[in-house]
Each structure stands twice: as C-alpha cells, then as structure tokens.
Image (tube, rainbow, N blue to C red; front, side):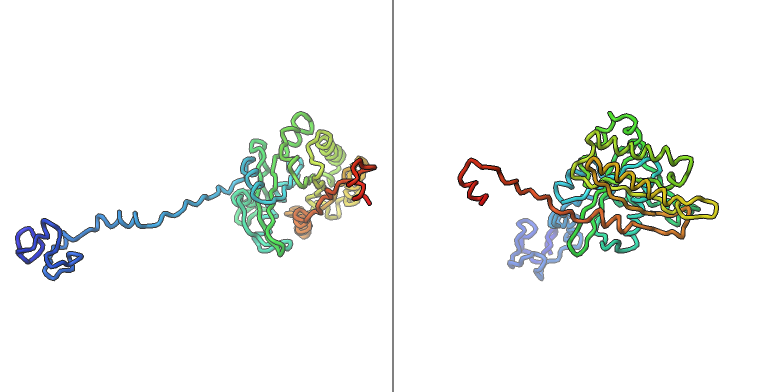
Length: 336
C-alpha cells in the first residue's frame, strides 16, 4: 500500500482521482481497497441524508378542546349542518348540571339511540363533570356554575345513528347575563347567540317552585324572562321554544313536605297558554339530571330531551301561492 493511499496497488491513483484502477464501483468493493474504518465512516452525514430523504409529514392541528368561540362556531356551521341549542335560565337553575349529565351519559356508552363520534370541546365537558365524579370525594354531586366573566361559549358534540352523524352545539352562558338582560332590556342585544339558535330551552327550576318562600316571585320572573326576549326580537321565528323543568327530585313527596307537583303542572300550563295566545308554541319537558334531594328518583327525561334536540324538523313549504287573475297567459294556463 502506498503511503496516503487506501489501495495496495502502487499504480492506483484513487487517493488523488477518486477512480479505482480496476474499475470497481463503489470503490470499497475492490479487493485491493483497504481503507481504515475511520476513513470509511460516513456516520456524521447519515443523519443529514436520512433527514433529507425522510418524507415530510403534514402538520396536524390539535384542537384545544375548550369551549368554541364565535369565530370557531361560524367556521363549523359553514362546514357542517348543525343544531344549535341555547339554555336560558337563572343562576343555579341547572344548566351546567344538565350539560354535564348528557356528557356523562355518553361516557357510559350509546345513549338515546345515538353513539358518540367526536367532540371539539372534551375538556370543557370534563370540567363541568369533574365535581360530580366519585373521585371528587364530595358528599353530593356538584357542578361549577358558569361565570359571567366567561361570556358565552359553545360545547360541541357529534353523535351518529343509522341515519348518519348529527352535529350539536350547546350555548352556555351565565345565568347572571340573563338576569341582567331581564332587568335592563338594552342588554338583550348582547345575547347574540339567541337569534341563531334552532331551539331555545327556558330552564325552570322545580326547586324554587317547591319552596313556598321563592315560589311566587320566581314564577313572575320566569315569565318576565320569556316576555323580554320575545318582545325585543331576541328569538328567531323558526326557533323551537320549550320549557325544560329541572330538579324533579325536589318534588318527591316526603312526610313533612307539601305536594307541589300539581302546582308545577298548573304553572307549566299557564305559561304555555299565555304565549299561545300571541302565536308562540312552547313545549314542555321535565328532567332530573343529577338527583340530590332524593337519589331514588334517578335520572329522568334525559333521553327524551336529547332525542328532541336532534329530531328532524319538517322542511318548510316554500311553494309560492298561486297568483290571482295573472296578467300573463302562460300563468293563466298553469293555474288551470
């Protein structure tokens, strides 16, 4: 081997020209080639070569899984057909508990004829359910109420049945906002989610109906809330309106308590009839999302409520009315 050359042949100029005298390619395949391991080590370049040859993977956008903002809501509605539900009620009426109970139902498996498919707000759902979990070590199930500082956000849920996927958006706003708008109707314009809602649920707290000290005043405020929204154009003409009575466990008969179920039924009918006279149809549903006063009552009405939210509404007839004594002969022929 010539000094400085990796080849044993004296006439090979591979060290200078890089070409094997015997025509071997690659060079280290030649029997006369005896380069030291260090000279053949290309490890420092392998990582760069592999990086260049490795296919570039597309970046995947991970959703933050908190409540959807107004801009995110609009983007989703442009991409998918959605059903928007808005829950209207005072503080502690049971809005957040109702949302947590629906999410908990799907955590257990298929619910109300639907299977869970996806959600862009899983963390937001989990936050609402957290304190009702066994590990929270609370004596009674409890959920945090929505703060007025949080504004309004939307929880997203995609479920599927035999007819295909359904996309549900639930508006969650603090009861303090609704109370303030009821007292000052100038604030109703800020409840921007109501006009876009397909279904508006007025949450009726059965616990306040059961309490003689709060019953009369609460009934008056409940109807005042509906009147304020309807009279100020906050509700779409196409929206489905319904009363959702919560906390049915507080109506359970006890030896030292007066029966109030009849009073609840009477008030529900009173509200329905009052608004029917001005052309607004209001349905009635009753639920017990997470019983506290009487655990034996269990969960009531959640399946029917959820199925109602996703029920297909009949398409509106857009056929124009026939014209009377049309001026064009062709129109007169069509009328015959």
